[in-house]
Image 1 (tube, rainbow, N blue to C red):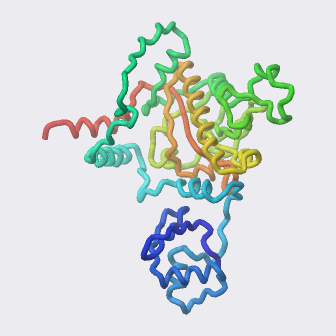
Image 2 (cartoon, rainbow, N blue to C red):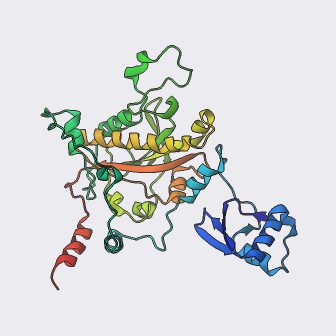
Image 3 (cartoon, one colour):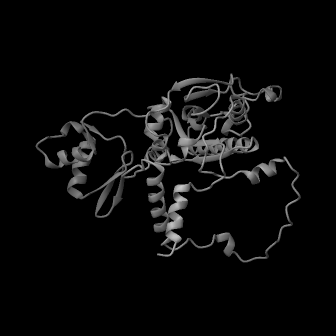
Amino acid sequence: MQINPHLFILPRTPGQIVWDYKNHKQYELDLEYSIRLAELISNPDKFSNNNSIDTQLLDAGILLSSAPAVIEWGWDELSKIFHIGTKNIPCKHTPQDIHEWSREYLDHCNEVLATPVPGTRLADRLAGELITLPKPACLPEGTLANTLIDRKTCRTFTGDALSLEVVSTLLYLSLGYLREREDAIDENCVEGLGARRTSPSGGGLNACEGFLLVQNVNGLNPGLYAYLPAVHALRLVNPLPGRPLGQLLCGQHFINNLPVGLFITSRFDKLWWKYEHSRAYRMAYVEAGHISQTFQLVATSLGLNTWLTGALTDDQVETLLGLNDSPEQPLFFVGCGNSDGGVLCKELKTLLNRQDSPS
């Protein structure tokens, strides 16, 4: 008999809360159950099928008949609890198409809007003189500022094919190791840490990587490809799954018409190697955010629209990318393509129009 390795115990008088953070389940134990669990933690061999508490703990998943596979975790338990405990957003049902997603999302928004809006931020309430800033300088055409202004999140894509040259540019300027900066590397830089990207990276580790989702790119078969930044090349990992891709993203079926997208992952083992404290776990998400924004700006400058999400059905995405029980984990998704610029999908717009129409 084994103790579930994904338990977090919170003392809450008069009992204790046992949280199975991997499976998003919580149980409240009274004194009798808490004492028995403590005994089994001390010695799992004391488990007895004739003890009703033992069998209940087993049925609840607090005890396991065999040890599960676990990711080798290089940091302390705090970051592990957060990472595993926030995987696989718990939902009773994944929307099977865009119509179902739209209905559920609208219901959710209406429920949220029925509650009070959070108050103003603390800084807005502070007393003191208000210093008015001058108007922004005139922005010339073709500048980075114009690209920043033009970037927006869209949810309606035509599915039109992209060229391999466009995809190459997206990957090189987002994740590639820049050949243009090879001569600018400091001579004291440690061997193996000299690669430079357009986005900053904690400790210069370049811990984030990318897997390219290809649905409609001229010259590439549909599938999932690992991007290899050192040689600016792709390697096929898996064909596209048979089910709609939206099911990988918690029912967000906007992905179904995207010609190309990027799953951004993080090599936790790289971060563990240099930073033993779990605060470095935050840097994985910071770096993924940098790369996502760079990808979007490059796509916008190429005349494309973008969409992004952090709502992943993690286990399914890990399987698709070949990362099960790996220290490399998917964190984020960003995609691009030709679009009519619609921020909302037409199915959600239809429901909103019905809601606003007088009965």
